[in-house]
Each structure stands twice: as structure tokens, then as C-alpha cells.
Image 1 (spheres, rainbow, N blue to C red):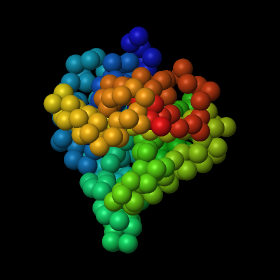
Image 2 (image 1 turned 60 degrees about the vertical axis):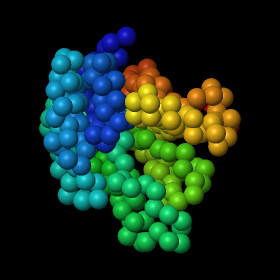
Image 3 (image 1 turned 90 degrees about the vertical axis):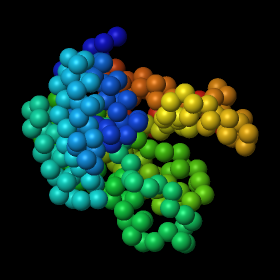
Length: 254
């Protein structure tokens, strides 16, 4: 089904991570030109070459969302790379999501989580979206949320609060920008094994032993490949009447 993202220009943040890099590969296989971003642009060189081999154009930009000027620079570079942006995927992660309980997490860490997950990406969007509106061709924004934003997990409080805020921001973006044809949806993965088969087996064994896997209808952990279909769908015109939604891919966790 190659071609669902043909002629689309997509910005993917967090492209240096396991999930972000696989999103880039999935989008490239569907024909999208890609602006790839992570904290250190050099980390993306091999991925960019791989994507170029798939017949699409890659560009790389370093961006640390805790630095507001980096967010501005990313937005400008992304727009200029291919003369516009049609899809934005916000999949960047802070350096450390597990910070301790609410009372012991320092204020600086709370601020860093919010900046990396919410305010930095939104600053880039504030620079991009007016150009998308002026271009008049609509667009798709996909935020990558987390179950920690909806179900408390010990020691992930600051991260979970930021991810929850990202979901609310997604709703507001959908409500305010929909009249311009810009859709905003959240993608929420379940427990995903992001390493090799051995890592996946170890994670699955651990979750089976502590009983957590009993809450998953499909009785296994997920892999990045389980997530790509939903993400491509949200980026493509197939989901042209879908906005303000949280798409959950978690194997039927209950």
C-alpha cells in the first residue's frame, strides 16, 4: 500500500529514539519526505541515509525542546526544508521520565518535563501552524501520549502530568484549528518492547510473572510494528474526518 503519504512532508520529533525512528521508516515507506529531529542531529545520519535509500527526501535538525530558541529554529528549518509541512508527529521524550514520587521530585524536574513534552513542542507549533493556515492545505498533528497521563504509575508523576497536559493541548488544537483543516489527534501506545527479540521476551516474562500481562487481552507485549498502521492512518488523508481523538494501541488492556 505504498503511497498513502505520497507528496506529504512530515516533521517527526524524537526521531533518534526507537519509536520515532520506526515512525520515520513507516512514513518513508508510504512516500513522505521527512524532517527528522532529535537532540543531536548527528545521531540521525544513519537513519537519514536509510530513508534516502527508500526514495524519499530526508532532512535532519537538532532540537532540545527545553531550549526555546531550538524550538523556533526547528520550526523554521522544517518549513524551509521542503517548502512546507503537512504532518507533525510529536514523539520526543525527556531524558528521564522516572523521577520519583510527587513530593521528592524537585521543581526543576517538573519544569523540565513540561518544557520537553508540552511547551517546547507547542512553541514550535506556534511558529509552524500560522504558515500551515496561510498555505490553506490543512494538515495533521499527532501527539504521542502515555498511559501514565491517565493511570498513575509510581515514580512517574511529573512525566504523567506532562503527558496528560499534552492530551488536553491536543484537544484544544483540534477545537481551534479544525476550521482551517488542521487535525490534531493523540496516539497512545501500551506496553511496547522497543528492543530486540531477547529484550521483548524478557519484558514479557517479567510482566507475566508479576501478573500485569493478565490485564492485556492479546496476552503479549507490543512491538513498534504494532503501532505503525495507526500512525500512518492518522497522518494520511484516510483519517480526514478524525480529529480530537485519542487512539489507543495497547493490546486490549483492561
